[in-house]
Image (tube, rainbow, N blue to C red; front, side, top):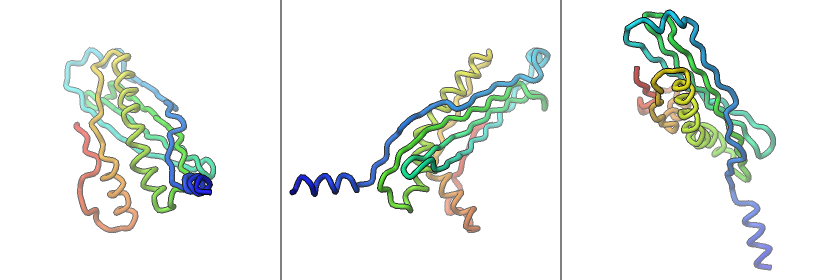
Length: 164
């Protein structure tokens, strides 16, 4: 009898599992090559990161962290890399109020190191010095998005800060 109670409690306990982490899409463009490769000027770097999430079924969620790196010289694009790093995450018996933070904080935190590595590798394979994306505080980003959605000012101003 105590074994049945233990199994029942275990079956109803919240659980979080990574089902799959995969590179959904990656692209590299060098629209102004080869002429721009001869220009001797300091490139300007622009980085953007976004999170997309949707529910696949009762327990599985698909999360994608999209990263793009654009490098320009004199207002012309040297290279542009965009990558979609995705994962399927299983959440069972998770309280409803915890699902959104898991999708906006925990899942992107798991996926981001893969995204960073794939972007750096693609840039390196294109013949450039790899760009290593700065760490992102997804918790601060999540709080900032909640504040923006509710129309109240964010309590801390620590969203994504990326180097130029």
